[in-house]
Length: 375
Image (cartoon, rainbow, N blue to C red; front, side, top):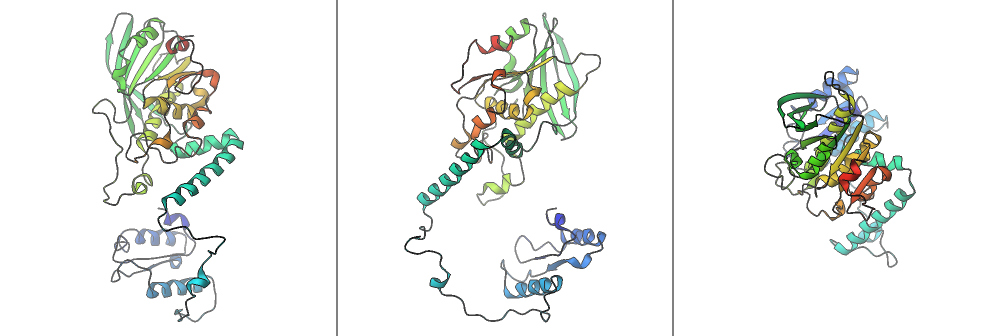
């Protein structure tokens, strides 16, 4: 797919006895069809070399010299054969001297200093940047915006009368992204038009508590949800691809982290409440978020950074969480790039301070969270 984006410009590739050896039958024929569609079939080249181990040898180099010579009209005789040359000495090649000594190979202290410099340089730029820059960076990190949250449908599975409220269980289906959420509605018979999305580390079972009862008694509906991999055995680590080589990029270069996927789920909930009409039922006047778990608190912060004005009030606890302190890429809270944009405080800064009650960040927390949400 990435190679196809370059069409119809000239493009060459080669195979060897490695993971590229099936390219002649898987991938390259599709590229040929794409280039043919543009009328440029000769602009794409595959140099087959499965009889060689993984390399970029003289045979392959010659083929690419010839390919470049043709398309750039360099005028060299074809085929272009590499000439012998005298390699430069180590002293001639080096960029290091007494004033600029070479770092030690595999020096962890040098790596720390370099990364520290990268971080401090980026933080200076972010501190002076418009919030729009911060939001766009976080949108890329999470992999979805509120505007692209998707079209959501509600399916009722069960409905029970609980005295002062109705309990309705069902499924929210995000038709755009092919995702499903099991939800539990607690809907007071004297509804005041307010809905509180209750995010809990235990999933939708977490709505069975005294705080939720207080919200219902005050007229607020409460929506509990099982985010991805909630509702059963807690996810102790992120899924990783089946590759024996320990490298985070094999997983996160192609897949969203669990933290990002759960943030997508929250965006689905907000989008549903704001945009989906269910029969003759009136739409909510006020949408709130409550999240006090060690995992769901930070997830709520990420969602609020993206949903912005769509959420009227939010009460949550971050537990002082920082992406920069997550040391294992299998950790359920790991997020590639999570610390890049001023970490969790950067996300939190994008949601109006007047609309949030936050524990864990040295912010004013009076009155108690539930009373504050009911104001």
